[in-house]
Length: 358
Image (cartoon, rainbow, N blue to C red):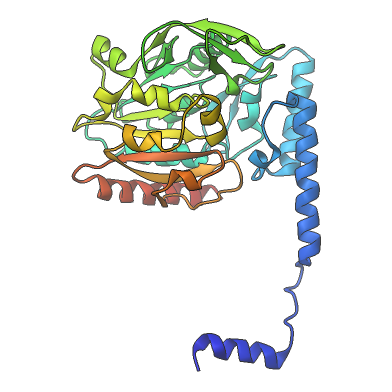
């Protein structure tokens, strides 16, 4: 008799096991999850409107602590406060810009936790001062944190943000945190070929700014911005700057960004790539998941996190993007000598940092 058979027989002889003390029946747990999701959905619609984001993307947000922190922001906004310096759940400073969804790290204390932990661990293994391209920098939470989390590395970050009102907040964030020496801003969109672009964004939701084709009108009520469009290879050619890490979060235009950097991404000293993978946004932009295979042919892909409660463990290899139907973040490691060991070391350091935060 196997161990499993012995265990099953023992359970049958004893009868049904009692639930652990303090636990709830599955029906109660399931009911709470449904009610929690409904509360979050109603809150999202009330605050940011119908087009903000699905409630499942807030699956790992602590409901009650987030609620009182959000109430604080509403109260501050009501008396005219537009922004202030706060501490994140990671323990570093950031500028919270009130009245925009980009404020969410103030009440979602684990926002960007895995992304920043793995990117920091990867960069700290560089022998020389690393350079980072932050494509889609928004108001600067990611890049200002990365600069603070690598204080002795001599890091240089180029933060690309095309929407003018968001770019102004990005500059303000960098200045208020005294990070001008580490972060350089670029008011441009990254594309597959250089040309002017238009971007639309929902009111109060700069995180969802998206390039729209010339022949299409912006959605009613959305903000509209005009920006220069450049390519990664073009910027590298004109500046001579080559990153060690490329972070890309551009609401479905990740394919276009990578296509415009094929020269950079085929070099022996090519950068690692941290990018958002969001199938719905890709589809809206006329792109398909399998396009990443060609553009990142010299890379191995690993899972970082998602917006639905960590559906796949941090660091798990990803071989079929088609199987991922939700928004998530991935890390592409260059398939070159020594990269596997470096990834293993970075993953271990990131996991240790994350455990220390709990």
